[in-house]
Amino acid sequence: MIQRLIPYPILSACIFSMWVLLTGFSPGHILLASVIAILVSRTMLALLPEKPALKLGWAIPKLAYYVALDIIQSNILTARIILFGKKDREADFVLMPVQLRSPYALATLSIILTATPGTLWIQHDPSRHMILIHMLDLTQKEAWVAMMKDRYEPLLMEIFE
Amino acid sequence: MSALLFALVITSAQILLGLAMLCGAYRMLRGPRAQDRALGLDSLYVSGMLLLITYGVQTGRTLYFEAALVIALLGFTGTVAIGKFLMRGEVIE
Amino acid sequence: MIQAPNLPGWAALIVGILLLSGASLTLLGTIGLVSLKSFYERAHAPGLGTSMGSILVLSASMICFSVLQTRPVVHEILIFIFITITTPVTLMLLSRASVYRDRAEASVDQAPPDLARVQPNAPNNNDCKGQKKE
Image 1 (cartoon, rainbow over the protein chains, first blue to last red):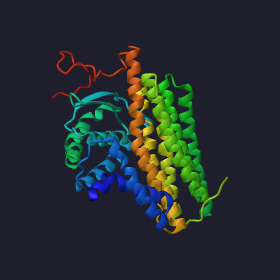
Image 2: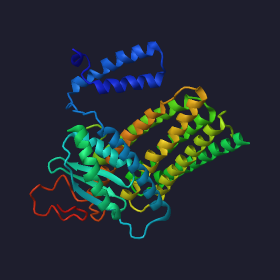
Image 3: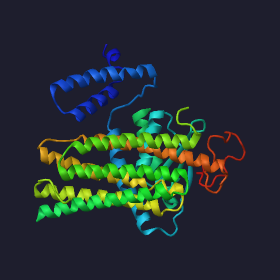
């Protein structure tokens, strides 16, 4: 019953909280927000997306913690490169294989990569499971690839697959 | 005294963001290629949005927040349209 | 136009530090946009403003309004979520457009290895520079 009424509970929750945040807390708006969240999220039924199998658990706060650390670190590195330059710095494309298959996991990975300055997601090849990335500083490549393999991919697999 | 200092800090943050907008505008006007111009426009609107947020902090009005939200939405749409056009020569395929 | 909201001292200190550091990071990003040499390097630079810069400025605004209105005001988080989700899309589209145009104009030293058109079993699909050995 509740599955038929709210087919996409996470989307409905997002719409509800966005409406309430934008308009303020009053009983009328909360009622309106719930009606809109239920009705608008039903339009996704017409689009028929692949349903995300999101597993809630400790992996999500862990991922958020690593991403926050990584954002701060890469911001400092990139700011240093822009301010002072770096002698042996070389920027180039990196081609690397990924284990992730779920499109939601790949989208999250692309958001993480772009949110950390210094790496830029350019292309994903679904037939060979490769991603093409541009790195600002190739001397960071080894550490960065190791971090992708050890931290992000297992966590994202745990969450989405 | 401390209120004056705080006001000066806010104003200097606004000046820094204004300089950031100038840098974005420079890349937009001088960029050697079209994608450089689009990138300059993108960072121009992001800095403009942050500038509006600091105006909101300065005046204590929530009006600026809504303007910033609209700028973020429209700027994204504009940059995506430009990127799509550069890639294919058409915005909607 | 020099004016300031009526904040208690500790809040003014935090808001001021957050605003200044966020604004200077954003400025640094756009300086990189002006000074770096090639398009792909420049595409990294605005990331400073959209990640750390906007986090700092938006949290300054959140703290300021929460103290002014004596209730938690968190709607700035919507702008942050929106910026974080949309920046990858714009950067990816722009860099893909740039890759496409570089290939079309055959400036091969700039363009990356072609991912989509290389056949999976073609003999020459691993001659790109940065490829990781498996």
